[in-house]
Length: 258
Image (tube, rainbow, N blue to C red; front, side, top):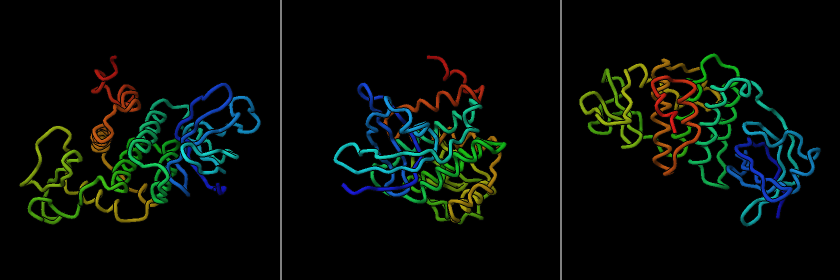
């Protein structure tokens, strides 16, 4: 069992037995990793604040069949700006849960790691967290192969600049021009400028996408459609989506009811 040392984001932690914890990380070296932290509940000094969700840590672990084994874990960045604002925390929950649902275990993805770290950092500081969430979801779905090409219409081949309106359907896996628009639940209608912006955002380095700005209504629509797509793909409802709906958008208030 070789020792792996890597930076990681803490996605989830739960108690296990009388003294242990099971922690799920998204690591730079190995992607999604589920690991056992032996004695973590009994010895607070060994893992001081190291397993808080949405934190960046320095992790040493040994890969084993089943759960990995945590040797050491040290807090690097707590992203404290998320913890004092319920709406930002809800967006962070959506990003983390999306990562858990979409990414397979033990498959390195350095671009996805950079995307997740960048999104969590900016969620705690930027004025418009819904824009951060929308950019993360579109680029993240693209990185796992779930986004259709935004180069041209999937029906007729019309190029991006040749139609004033476009429709993006994650559920159908299609991107269509005005003449072949998709009229069903979950399809996102984009004006030419928004379509060009999304296409450009997919082309450059992950670290540079945060300069892009979507209209707030468009960003909210993308977040909701992307969350629905993640639920469809995983076959499970996102707990974070319900919390986000209740906190951020009165139009979705009916979803707050049990």
